[in-house]
Image 1 (tube, rainbow, N blue to C red):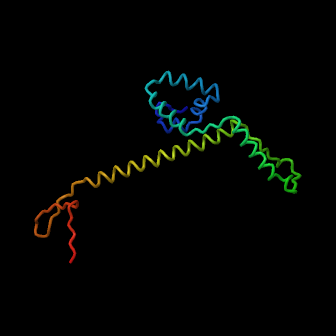
Image 2: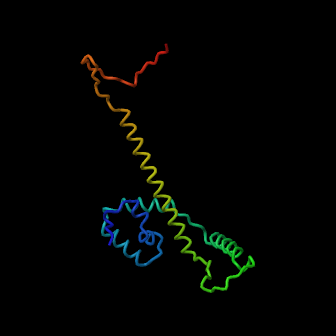
Image 3: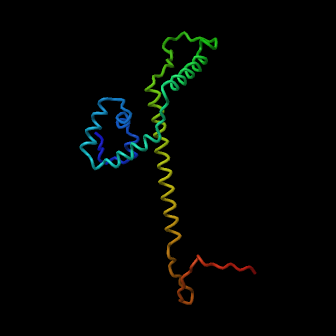
Length: 165
């Protein structure tokens, strides 16, 4: 069993069980997560953040628009079927069903959107990390440098005067 106590926002956003709870798709998931959240109020901030991310990246089409797009998709697939192109396959084991249910289509779409969200979070985190490192490097105090005559000097690169000869 997974240790949900250790979960971060990204973990909740990418967990299929939690997504089934969030989108109210499975009674068992709804019951489990409602009880788990009630038992772990210390994770409420992370849960709320995860819900905000899921909500921001979830695309919800109105039912008529979804049905229209599904019909267009089905028609396009039928146009590509062997019967419409004049070729036939006698092997009944190779019959392909192109019917996709509404929930299957939404699950695929959600998975893709969540993957995009996670990638965006990783890219943003990497960018912040690199910028922080660059800032820390630029603010670093240079170490003294010893010259061949045993004199020590400290170079300051922020006030370099360039002269042309």
